[in-house]
Amino acid sequence: MSRLASKPVVLASGVTVKVEGAQVRVKGPKGELLVPVPEGIEVKVEGANVHVARRDDSRKALQGLTWSLLRNAAVGVHQPFSRKIEIVGKGWRSTVKGNVINLQVGHTHPVDFTLPAGVTASQENPGSFTLFSHDKQLLGQTCVNIQKLRPVEPYKLKGIRLQGQVLRQKVRKAAGV
Picture 1 (cartoon, helix red, strand yellow):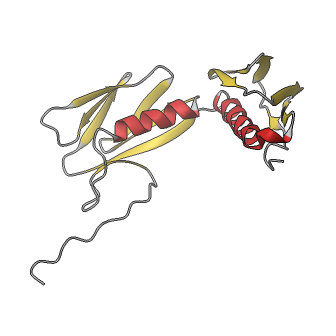
Picture 2 (cartoon, rainbow, N blue to C red):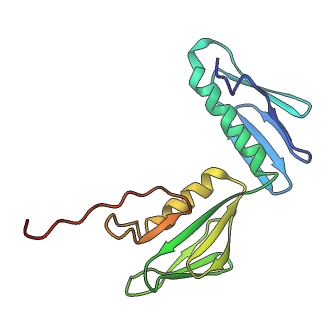
Picture 3 (cartoon, rainbow, N blue to C red):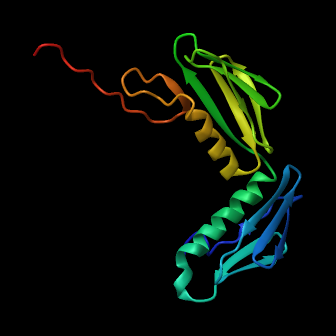
């Protein structure tokens, strides 16, 4: 049995969970999410606890996955997730205006990145901004899409990266050895 999935998902105050056939609806003050439930997995709501069980031993991995998705949804609708994005490069900067992030990252023109519905941004300084969302998967995919605009290059480590992202710098070739 999955160690985490054997524990219940504890709901915060103001969060409600309804099982609707093959999906679970999680509602909270910050939003609403639908979590799919695969075949062979049962979700039971008992007060402020949600239990995830499997009908037989053939779905061990899906039990842990479903538990994790439910937990992320329950946490996200109560308190949104955040990711800080840093821009490293001389003269590179960003500005946030509403749901559009204007990035000047070494292209011949500024790039406007429109945030999907459910994701918001705030600007700390021209070299970094923070994204917020109640959906952890959507937030991660948005970060990846922004990073694709200017990936980190391995020699000088210039580019768009997440705060705390571990990067390995390559050593340049030695000349004439």
